[in-house]
Each structure stands twice: as C-alpha cells, then as structure tokens.
Image 1 (cartoon, rainbow, N blue to C red):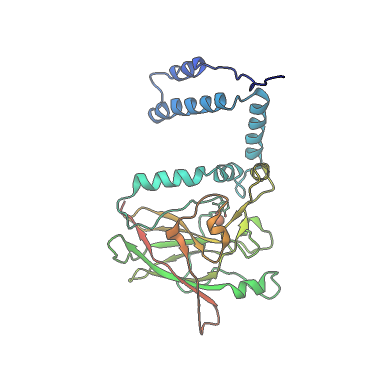
Image 2: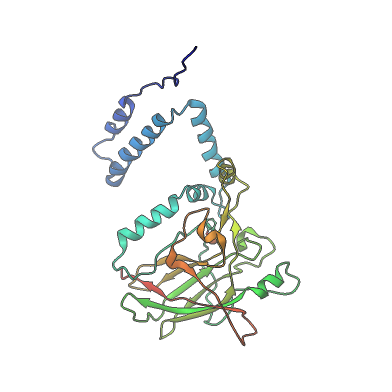
Length: 298
Ligand code: MBD
Ligand code: FE
C-alpha cells in the first residue's frame, strides 16, 4: 500500500521583510516610520502564511485598481471594500476608544460612503421626505413607514446642549440614497436640524429599510465569492456636533429588522438598536422614535 503525506510547504525566512523595514531613513515622517514597519511585517507574514503566488497577487492588484477606477464622488468602492472586511468598523472602534472622555457618550458607528456636506438646514418639526406623491413607486411604503423622530442632545452629565446640529440621512424605501438614484430629488432624505434651548431636535422621516450595499462592483463580487450576503439592516445615519464637543458620527438601527444581527459591514452596536412605536393622531406619521444623543467634551 501507499502512504500519502501532505505536500511539504516551502519555508520562508524574513530576509526581505527585514531589509524593507531597515530601509526607512532617519528623516522619515514620524507616524509613518511607526506604522509602516508594522504594516510591512503583517503584510509579509500574511503572504508567507498563505503561500501567496504571483498570479494571486496580480489578481489582487487588478482588484484594487478596479475599485479605484469605479470610485468617484457618488461611489466609493475602496471604502466599501474596507467596510465588508470590517476595517471601517474597526477603525471607528479604535478612534472612539482613543478619544472617549466618559462612558456615557452615545456610541459611534461608521460614516459609510453616502454622507453629503451641506444637507439643507431645516426648522425643527419639518420633514426630510421631499415631493412624496402617489406617483412615486414606493409611495404606499413611505406612508406606512412615516415616522416622527425626536429627542435631545445632551452632555455626559445630562445637561441639554443648545445649538447642536443634528445632521441626518437615510435611504429611500427602494434602498437607494438620493445620489445613487436619478429619480429622487437632490438632497432627498437629508437634513440638518439645530437643537433649541432645551437641547431638543425633531423631524419627520421614514422608518429605514434593509438594503444591499452596492454589489455590482468588485466588493460585491468578493462577497459572492465568499458566499456572503450584501444586506445592511435598516438604519438612519447621524452626525451630531456642537462647539466644545467631539462630533459624533453614528447610526440608529430599526429593531424590526433581521439584519440587525447580521450586518454586511459589521457596524451594529446594541445601544444603537431602537424601537419605533405606533403614533396616534398625527396625519404625517404612523410611527415615532425618541432618541437622545450624548456628546463627549472635546
Ligand atoms: C451604507 O449605506 C452604509 O451606511 C455603509 C456603512 C456602507 C455601505 C452602505
Ligand atoms: Fe447607510
């Protein structure tokens, strides 16, 4: 009979790694001089661990180039690639742990690729839903999911912050953000609200729906090859900022949604999962949500 043994893997030493690390010059940028040796060590260890071949490396270079070619101000494929491997969530966790000054601050969540500066500054109590008429394909769902969102912006000791800006954005019921969708008005489902004397903000919006992250590019192809789904739980994005406080970037997740336990970009935190409750007597909203944001001092 014949015995078979596992094919013998080649052995590699760290000659190249050591040379690259010691090539850094005495006048190198400080942070880069600290970060690059670590990056090179991990990158090389990874290549040795998986026996990375030239053909595979070429595929990866082409893949990253494809991500870059696809990216513009409406689509950030490289960021999306980072998102599906959990890197944006990880750096968000690291940043918030580095900067936190109290443990009562509202947890952060990732910015994602669809933030836009200069969302319209709107009076409290107004709506971020534009031009909703029965001719809009998702009209019925928008009515069924209409929601009044309100709350306060507070210091970590519970004092109201006046004049804080609550910058909010979410996707349409078809799962597309306004800049991804020709059929939506500019800045649809986006707005900025300023808190009053009591730290209160309020606006009308929609309960968010789960939707697939853009999966028609390289990031989506990678998800498919990994037998992974592209869905994010329904979420509303917030950026909350006030002078003297650290800006908070976060998201709230609707608890009706199964993807809360299974986010394609790994951004959900328990404290950010919220319950919309039925709202009576308001012709403009079937649901309401109350949420207070707590900002840390700068
Ligand atoms: C999104 O809407 C999003 O919020 C993130 C983080 C990634 C992809 C799409
Ligand atoms: Fe999003």
